[in-house]
Image 1: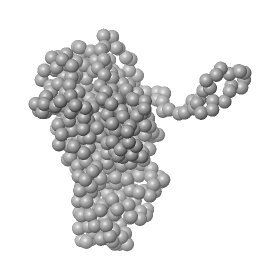
Image 2: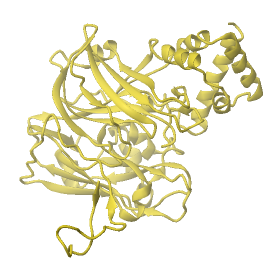
Image 3: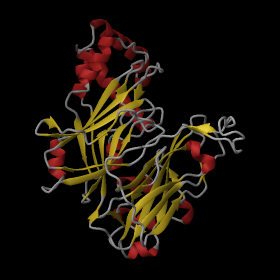
Image 4: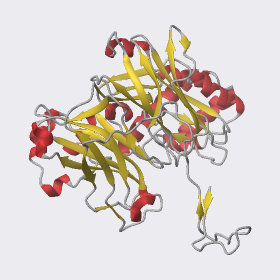
Length: 445
């Protein structure tokens, strides 16, 4: 916490009152590995939104295209640092910034875009647009609310461009506008520091945790509820080479109800100690990519992300989704050497639903039947009107410990959004499918 007065104190023993000049900010006092910046010879590439008008709706994912300068198209350049550039008048709306490398298969369509079209689209509503499809490429850099700059450690950089690449990037902005304010504009983005000769290791980014789907359920009125996301041994055996994958930094991410996250490496059936990363006092307003103790992940290892939520103050069920009012459980690992491996996220199976229903009392099973009939096809109303007792909470937690399906591959956006389902109509269709499965199972209990 901090405070100040604009005037010098008249008496050293009793400084003048600070009035409204006060505030608080998250600070990391100790990191396990300190990065010493070496900016010698570095150039900068500023990637900003072009005075985008923020839509007057709760949640917007805005994707703008960036045609790389000629030097990037002719020869690879190498990022060694990225820093947020947040437009002060629109600061309250900016939730996160993610930079993607557009896949080379999209180059022909990208070349056809006009300067005006490159200014962007609402990619949460226009998933068929080429700029939205760029999110299927590698996640190059990510910033979330409260974070600061990140510098790669000595010997590590991130290659950008080159003649074999598309020559385009997409910068994705998550605008959070719960009051549906109209007329606000934004020019935020990232400042990239780069060098012309790459360092010894070329970095990549890997998302692990729970896929963002509406059947990730966090019940209301609880002081502690845990969701698990896993990247299992079958996935690491398929994608990680024998010499391993070297992790050096991480960004932990939930939304407003998250209070603690722990990322573990499971080897030969046992969790390595200490955890790969852990935050037991998670602050949504202080999210940053942090250096962690360098650790090698080998084929056959598993990664387990535990996300703890607190919902004492809400009467509504929270589900997985893209809006700030929804929830997530994801970690973004920075590693080397770069692989064609950007996502490894899990999601519940039908067995999870069945296990939950089986653990309920007969009265609670009948309550779900009644709600299914009262709100046919409306999964959100069904779960929000269900009265959660201790046994129901326990049954759900037990069910979430069942074996999950795992998405394992290069396409981060597909993994995060459940095979293309967003949180709009497509997401709710998935939610309705889950509700339909639930109803069928209930009538057979």
